Length: 209
Image 1: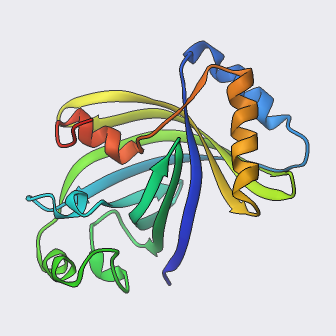
Image 2: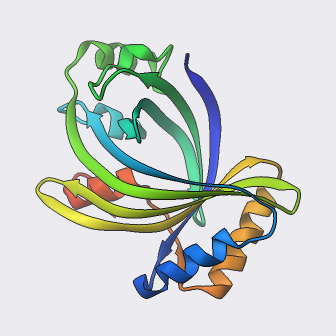
């Protein structure tokens, strides 16, 4: 069954890799920690030959989260000062094979959707990283802090992933900003305007800054 929601998250890039362990230790020791989990995540992002998805500001990936495959569509939304807001659909699937027909509808116009469902998709980039997910309550909001470390691969090139994603599970967006500011004031963290998908497209030359 597909799950639709609006994703709201603050992305922070780690400016000083030497602080990575200190950041992880600090986050894990925050008050009101609900849970700490670790995942090995490997994702392949797909598009058409003429880049219909990325032209419509849509990202489509199939990702292995430990032993479970999840097919995901993200589209629309906005990015303001590191806060990313998007529509997101998630569907558990059996393999990493691309298949847009598992989604009830796509966040693109009807003409583009018809073309996408009939056309061939190919892999444009891949991400492999380890995620430490720490869920906390902060100022009466439930927030997941994801510590992502790994690599983006695109067009025979690669670049590192070393970032903190702070996602609002429930509560107020203001809490997300307050938690982000607290971490920025303590560590060498900077607001990140680009998703992993966008950074992969830039790496392959398919997106200009």
